[in-house]
Image 1 (cartoon, one colour):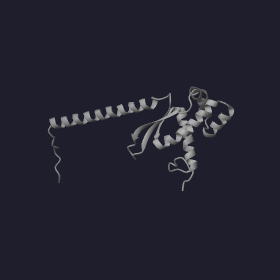
Image 2 (cartoon, helix red, strand yellow):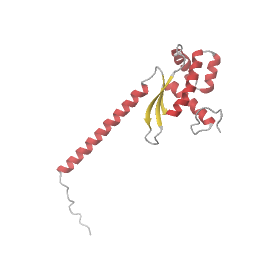
Image 3 (cartoon, one colour):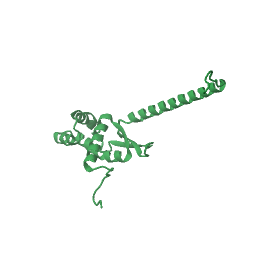
Image 4 (cartoon, rainbow, N blue to C red):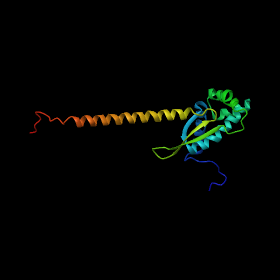
Length: 165
């Protein structure tokens, strides 16, 4: 039984889950917004919020605690110099999970996981991709209709000299 064991396992071992959460935290710090499954986003929320709280303290011990999770010194510097001071007057709630719907391949619930105050980056990108797909589909449909129209106008041509033996 799972007495006293909190958190989602996400179908992964402890070490794999820990590495994945650290990588997601690094991605959210560098990109400010990522698209992932909803359970992963909800689990990573605690990790990222804890790192931002350390960044708000801005001392050596906090920096070392963050370096345990995020190995990239440039990302740690960005966290402590840009992101931490931005949330200095905020008491938690640094991240947001916005549900997108289900993934087409396996039906997994997808979400945008973003830092509050940096929103709109992924949403704009998703909308732009959606418009491109719609334009491409409309163009393809138009080409198919045009080809069908030309085929109706021209009678089928018979091949000459192609008798079978």
